Image 1 (tube, rainbow, N blue to C red):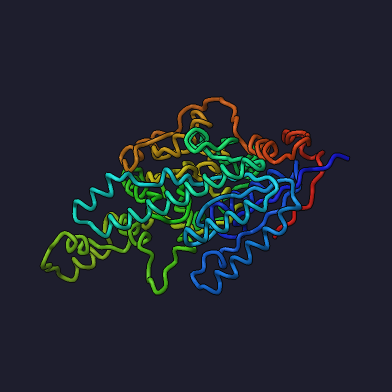
Image 2 (cartoon, rainbow, N blue to C red):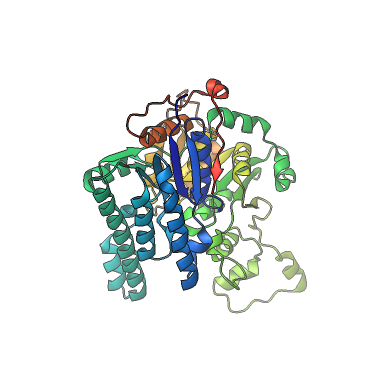
Length: 453
C-alpha cells in the first residue's frame, strides 16, 4: 500500500482568529491526500509580556521543534504576531522551527513590505509637528522592515541546504518574494475555505432560527452583512452611513466582535463600538447633536424634551450587532445575507478570510477597492463588485441596484486546487501520489485520523 505524505502544520488553531480559522479549513482540505498533524501555537504563552511566561513560550516552541523530524514536510502558517510580541522573540522562534523542519514551506498571510508606510508620510507628520505620530510610524516601519527582511534572508540561506517553498495569497506578492527578495520556489493561491458541495449543503440548510435576532425582523427584510472582528480598518462605518440611504426594508447585520487581544482592562466600551454607535445615532438625541454642534444653551419644555428623547436618525431598529461566530455559524450567516459588504480601508493586507468565505459560499459580494481585494478578484472574475473606499453613497446605490446577471464562469481556484498545491509542495523527493479527487469521488478515499496538538 502506498505511503501517504506526513505533514506538520504550525499555526494557531483553537483561537478566535483568522489564521486559526483558515488552518482548520486547510486541515479538512488536506486530510484526503496526506496525514496531517497541527501543532497549535499557544497564544497565552507566546503573547504574554511576563518574563517567566516568555521562557515557557520558548520551551513550548522547542517542544514543537523536537517532533518535526518525524514528518516529510513542515508548513508554517506565518502571521508574525502569533510567534511573539517583540521582533527578537518572533525571529528567534521562527528560526528554531524552520531549522528543525526536514523540508519547509511557509504560508505568508501578511507581506510586511506592503505595511511599511511611505517615508513621505513620516516626514509629513514631523513637518506638521506631529512628532509623537511620526515617531510611532517610524518605529512601526522599522519593526516591519526588520521582521520581513530578516526572515527573507534566513529563508534564502535555508534554501541552499534543504527544500524551502513559499505560498502567498496573490500573484503580486509571489512576484515580490521571487523577483525582489530572491526566494526560489514561490507559489500563489487565494485563501479557500469551503468546498462547493459543502457550500451548497450549508445554503440549503440555513434558516434564521440559528440567529434569534433575525427572527424578530419583518418578513421580506433585505439583509446586508458585514463580517470580521471589529476594528477601525474594517471600515464598517461606511456600511452604517450607506444604510441611511437605503429603503427601510434594508437591515445591516454586523457579524463580529472585539478581538480577544484588543480587550482593554476597565474600558467601559470599546472605542470602535462607540464610534459605530455614534454613526448610527444609537442612544443619541437631537439635544446631543445640538450640543456637539456647539450650542451653549437649550431651552425646551417638558413635552419637547420627551419628543426629542430619541434621535430621528437613530438606526437601532435597522443596525444589528450579531456577535462573534464560530466557523459553521459564519458560513450560515453568509448564506442568509442578500449581500455581503466588505468596506475595508487600505492597510497593506495581502489577504482576507471573509471575502474568500463569501465567494466560496456563492454570496453576492460588494467590496471596497483595496489592493488586496483587487488582487483577490483576479482569481474570481466577475464575482466581486467594487466601490471606492469610504464612498457610502456609491455603496448604497450598488446595494439597492441588485446583483448583476450571473456570469456563468466556473470557479477555478477553490479548496481542491488549494489542496493540490499543498500536496505538491509537501511531497518528499521521489514520492508520487494522486491529486485530491473531485467531490463525487471523495467518499471512496480513505479517511485518516487527524492528530491535534
